[in-house]
Image (tube, rainbow, N blue to C red):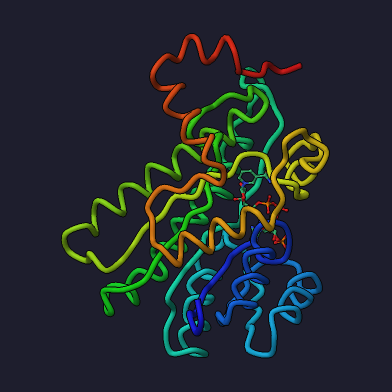
Length: 256
Ligand SMILES: NC(=O)c1ccc[n+]([C@@H]2O[C@H](COP(=O)([O-])OP(=O)(O)OC[C@H]3O[C@@H](n4cnc5c(N)ncnc54)[C@H](OP(=O)(O)O)[C@@H]3O)[C@@H](O)[C@H]2O)c1
């Protein structure tokens, strides 16, 4: 981790802030991106004097391109780019509007696509680097009706992530592309969801941000392509695809 240059979007709070603090504590130099100035500056201050905070709206392509430029200008290179910023939604599939779906695709898919495309030329030049896209267990198993549009966006993100990996596999084998799938994590994600919703921090079994950050740091230290933040999640995915009907009957959550 020492001296790695790591760009993290959605670094003003939650999972992104925890990754930033841990990476910096292990000697990485971090570039932090989010919209809220005060929160982002506080995380940057906790990450030491080398941390660079760049106010960025990841749904604006030119903002993300500027983030990549500022990171390379400041540190001369980037080693790791983490597309972590994202947003949930609380609305049953029968009630999802065009705007709901557009916002999910904008916040969770296009935002990460901008990040991938912004840093790729730099990584290709060096045939080195790692992109990590923070997805969700809901991107593997759409078990929660009220998060269906979010789930759809994370499935789309996973497809783009795997597609990029396939594109680079033979031409730029030094560039690693990683999907990270957390389950429920104790952050303000639930409260920040479009149309409100339950506080993720009060949900049973919520994982701590530090635990999730440790898994992400390990996926950088020992590059992997498909990472679950608890080992049991990978088993759940296998069980779901083995027998969807049985899994849905036992585990899927309806709108109430
Ligand atoms: N918490 C969970 O249960 C859970 C589970 C699975 C996956 N995830 C995924 O984990 C990632 C991080 O979520 P979290 O739980 O840490 O959520 P969070 O506490 O709500 O934090 C979201 C972060 O993303 C930033 N962000 C949101 N929209 C942005 C935008 N347009 N431009 C720039 N930054 C933006 C926010 O900063 P600003 O508001 O300052 O911009 C904040 O730093 C997301 O991709 C989420 O889908 C979360």
